[in-house]
Amino acid sequence: MSSNTTALARKFRVDVTSDLTLAGGWVEVKGFYSLKPAVNPNLVDTSAYDTNGWDSFEITGNAWSLASSFWRRTTTGVYDPAQELLRARQAQFGDAARVGVRWYDKNGGPEAFQGVAIVGWERANDGVKDADAAQVSLTGDGILTPISNPGVAAAAPVVLAASPSGVAAGGQVQITGSGFTGTVASTGVKFGATAATSWVVVSDNLLVAIMPAGSAGAANITVTNAVGTSAAFAYTRGA
Image (cartoon, rainbow, N blue to C red; front, side):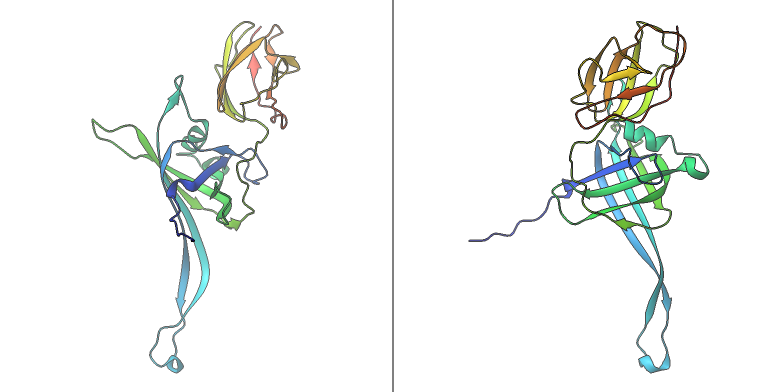
């Protein structure tokens, strides 16, 4: 006997990227509890005498948006890197105010879209007893494209941030991004061409590395897992 079940709202995943060509660098937004995508057509009234009093319309354009709210959680004092990527876009102009975004059914369903959007950010809760949360409004800038569902397959790491800057040999560097689970042993984290002395993967989005010996100057960070190596993240080290 067959049965009918209702899909769960939590089936969706949202990824963002700073790459406005949408070619890669996707990072999952964690902690969201509300997701409202919308496509609103611009309707032009084309009613005429021969429609016999009935309204008639044509769509002359479309606008899309995505509204989402999420909890502002931290891991060892570090906010979710995808949330931080969004937050950093507030009060900016031009491309600095935009992100690439995609959302899709984690269960492999047909709902999967991506596009470039302008970011609006505000606190979602403001009461004394409220838990900290934020609300992001993404206003589509251009085409919203249906895509093949990317699923949740493993991907090469993405490095979004590293702090503090200017760390010298033996110091700790917190690296945030995604895809850090399964980082390759011995050579999985590098500063320039030199592997970190050691590192700890705190979560898929955070690792802490010890700066190896070397000269002060450029030491771009790369992270490697079984799938591949991240794009180099610009970093300047101390002596």
